[in-house]
Amino acid sequence: MGDRISKNFAEAREKSTEADAHKRFKFRRCETPGQNVKDRGVWDFVRDSTDHIHTVIDGVKRYIVCLQNKRCSCGQFQLDELPCAHALAALRHMNESYENYCSPYYTRESLLHSYEIPVDPLPDESKWNVPQHIAEEVVMPPTGKRQSGRPQNQRYKRHDDVNGKKYKVSCRNCGLEGHNKRSCKNAPNRK
Image 1: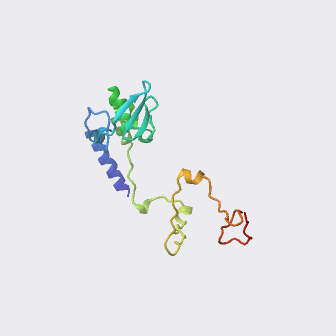
Image 2: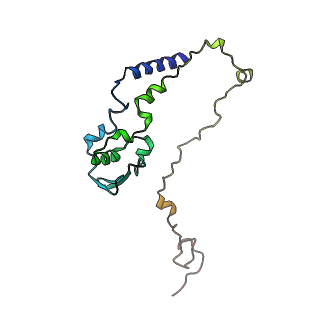
C-alpha cells in the first residue's frame, strides 16, 4: 500500500514539473473553466446592475452573479471556487479574464507545492511498531441486519407540501370534522 502511494506521488510530481511552465492555471476537466461552455451557448443575455453585479438570463431562468464576492445564485461559483458558466458570461460581457476570479488553489504553484512534501516509504509489515492495545483490538463487521421484503419508498415532499395546509375530512351528514358520510354514526341534520 505504501509503495503504491509513493509511486503515485512520484508520478504526480514528475507530471507537475513537466507541465507547461507558461501556463499559470492547471485544470483537469478542460483547459479553461469555460471551454465546454463556449460551444453550448449557455447564456442568452447579460444585464449589468452595477459594476460587479450582473443578471444572466439562461433561457427561462435568471442567475445573479456578483463578481466582487465571487458568488452566483446557481451556487457553482462558490462551490468550486471557479467561475461557473454564468460568471463566465458576465466576465466575457465585461471583457475581463477569468484568471482573476479563480481560487489560488488552482494555480500551478499550488499544484507544485502540494507534491513537494516527500512520502516516506514504509518498512516491511513485520517491522512495524504497533502498540499492544491496538494489536489486541479486534474490529468486527457491522451487526445491522437488512429488513426482509421490498424497502418502502417515501415520496420526497416539496417545500409547499410540507408547509401547506392539511386537508381536514368533514362529514356531509352531521357537519363534524374527523370522519366522512360513510362512517358517520350521528343522525343526519335536516335543513
